[in-house]
Structure formats: structure tokens, C-alpha cells
Amino acid sequence: MTIVERYLAAWNETDAEARAKAVAELWTEDATYTDPMADVAGHEGIAAVIAGAQEMFPGLVFTPGELDDAHHDLVRFTWHLGPAGGEALAVGFDVVKLAEDGRIRQVLGFLDKVPG
Image (cartoon, helix red, strand yellow):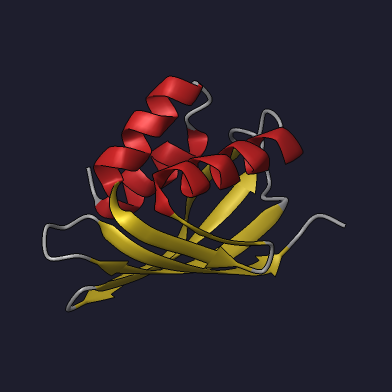
């Protein structure tokens, strides 16, 4: 499973315990996540942002978008949020910086399309 697939799986995990485990396995302890609506650090903060997104958009799922590119310790990709198999209601673009151990150290997220 690629880093993008693991990342999106964590965002789609609805069980709080399983989500916390996924976050701990995927992100470094001091990792940061920043997007237009959040700026958090650490496993608890990241898991809380994911839980908040799920509460805001119940039943919707994150899927990979068209772009997936990487070099050095950086990964950039687009994602879609919408009903399973349906049209995306939200589209975003994330840039991920990886630590030496391959876990995520930093995420910078951008929202290209939001429900309105």
C-alpha cells in the first residue's frame, strides 16, 4: 500500500481506536497537519482533525485524485471527498513531507473545491 493509500485509509477510518492506531503508525509523534481549517501537531491533534472531518461529512469517503507525484522526501497528491462511487463534493491537494523512517512528518493541505 502506498503512502497516499495509507493516508486516505486513515482519513476514512471511522473507528476511533483503529484511527488512532493508523495515525500512530503513519505519522511521527511530532508531525504537523495544516490546512485552511486546521493547524495541529501530534497524533491526538491529527486524529481529532480526521474525526472532525468525518463528523462534518458523514458517510463520505476520501479517494485518490488525478495527481500523485514524489521526489526526495516529498509527496504531492490530489484527493476527492464524496459518496462512494459518486461525484466529488470536495477536492483537495496535499503536500506531505516524510521523515527518514518513511512516516509523515508534515502535511500541508489545500482545498480546491468545497461544498457550498
